[in-house]
Length: 494
Image 1 (cartoon, rainbow, N blue to C red):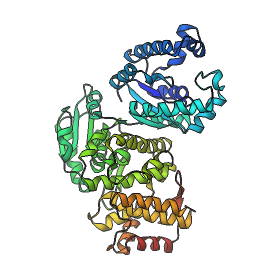
Image 2 (image 1 turned 45 degrees about the vertical axis):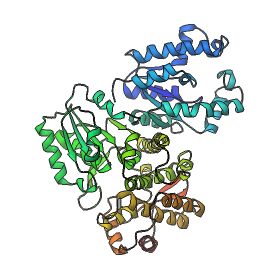
Image 3 (image 1 turned 90 degrees about the horizontal axis):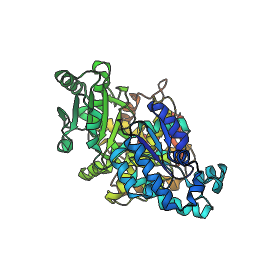
Image 4 (image 1 turned 180 degrees about the horizontal axis):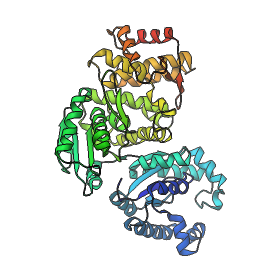
C-alpha cells in the first residue's frame, strides 16, 4: 500500500521464506530472510551462532532488522520465530513496517519442521513439548505485533496474494491515509457518525450511511464531487464508514474516469470482518448489490477502537457476519466466536477477532477473486437472508436479516449436509447472546421467495445454496428442491 516493507512473522514452519519470496515478486521488490542474511554476513549457521548464547544472537538479529527496515531496498522481510521478543524491534516495526502474522495450527507447523530436519536445522525445536511451549509463548506476541493475520495453510501462491491484499487492523490505522495519498489528490467519502475521526487529508463528502446510500443518486453525488475536485486517474478515493459507504464509494471509484485507486476504511464490525474487504463494490437497484464491479482497494485500514462507538444494535448485527465467517473458517476462529460472551466482550479482544475473521475472507478472495468458485462459501446464510432483508423493507439491519438466513441455512445443513445438530444449536446460542433473532415473524413467505428470485447469484433460474458439513467445511453450489426451500423460508418467518 506504500513504501513500508512487509515484514512476515510467525512460528517455525509457517513458510515465511517461501511465501515471502512470492510476495516480493508480486510487489516487484527484493526479499530478505533475516536468518539467511545473518548467516551470509557471519559465515556461520544459525545453530552455530546460538552456541554463543541466544542474547548475543538477538542483538545481532535486531541490528540487521533495523538496517533492512530503515533502508529503501527491501520490499519483504522474513523474521525468525523469536525476533519479536525484543521491544525495540516491535516498536520499529509498528512505526515503519506492515507486519503480517503467518498463522497455522500447531500440528501443521510441527510436521513441517520435522520434515525440514527438526532440531538439526531449528535449534529451538528440540522436542514437541518445547515446541508447544514456545508456540504458546509467542502466539500472542505475534498477534499483538501484527497488522494482519494470514492463513499460512493456504498454498504459497494464494497466501502471497492474501499477504499483498491483507488489511491493516490496528489502533490509529486511519493515520496511514496520508501515506496512501503521498502527493495525490485524495477525496474522503465518510460516514456521518465517524466524520470527526478522519484525519484531514483532503476534501470530503459526508454520507448518512445505511443501505439507502447505495443508490444511483449517491453515485451521481460522488461522481460530481470527483469532477469538482478534479480527480485524475492517479488520484485516490478513501471510503471511511460502514459497508454501505465502502460499497458505494468503491463503485464510484471503479467507474469514474474508468477507475481510480481507492482505500477501504471500514468502521463497523460488519465492515471490518466482511463488507469492507475483497473488492466487491456496488449499489442496489432491483435487488441487493445487483449493480456493481469487482474493484479491489489498494489498502484496507481498520481501527478496532472505532467499534467502541457503535450502537449496540449495529455491533450485534455485525456479529452475525462474524459468526458466519467463523463457521466457514473453523479453528481457531470458530472456538473464539463460539465462546464469545454476551455483547461486545472485552475491548482488548477485538483486534484478534477482526484479524482472524478478515484472514478467512482474504484467503478465500485470494484464491477466487471474481467469485467463480470457492468464494461462494462466504454467502452462507445470505440466500435466504437477503430475501428476508428485502421483504422487511428496512425494518431489519443487514446483519439481523443474515442472522435469520444463517439459522435457516444451518437447519438446511442438518437436513441435507450432515451437520451435527450440536453445532447448529451452539451457533444459535451465539446469536441469542448477541440479542439476535433466528426468525423474522410477520413477514410473508411469498415476499421473501419473490425477493430471492431477484438474487444475482441464481443460475438458470435456480438457487445454489451454501451448506455446512462441519465448522471449517462449507460446501457450495448445492441445489435444493423448491419444497425444501419453501419449508425453510416458512420456518424462518414463522
